[in-house]
Amino acid sequence: MLAVKEYQTVTNISGPLMLVEMVDEAKYGHIVDIELGDGSIRHGQILQVENDKVLVQVFEGTRGIDVSRSTVRFLAKPLELAVSPDILGRVFSGLGEPKDDGPAIIPDKRLDINSKPINPYARNYPNEFIQTGISSIDGLNPLVRGQKLPIFSGAGLPHRFRRDGNHIRGGTILYRRPASNRGNRTCGYVRQSCQRPCD
Image (cartoon, rainbow, N blue to C red; front, side, top):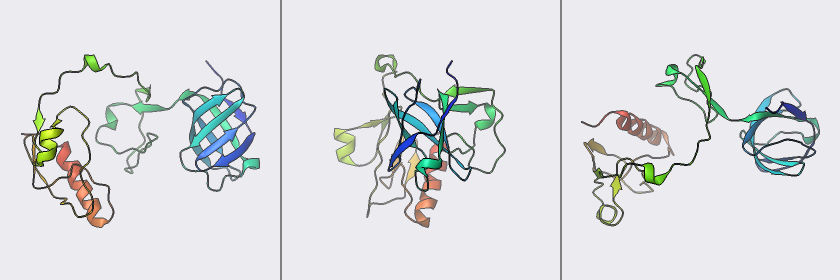
């Protein structure tokens, strides 16, 4: 197993990317902690390794990072999620940290979020048709339960819908990015509606 190593050799920052030089034994996909001059910590992931140069994507952004006063800590492991039955019904950030003001998760184990590719031949054949009511979609590109579903929405499109078994009636939206308070209400309604089992 690789050891945790620290470097103060940040040479360049561009957008969300940070270049660290004179690094040894870094691996693609591993995570890093970036300690700023004021003691705050940001997180990132290794996107590219070339000889002794490492390109890191900083998750929280690079604004305010001082190249000369920053320490990059290579944690020698991929991003892991703490799992236990307590995570059911909770809301988490992209890094797996609780966002719902609930208690911290005491994990039964930690799992690597990177998984092996899915073998398409091992999947069950999708056969439960989802009727959208939009003839061009239902006829040319039908949606079925068990596949990734596209997002239908845009300016001027209706945003209300009603679930009726496998059918979606009265609108064209499965999920909507909120642009206003009304959008937040819509997202909440959609999320709650989609979490209910179909009758």
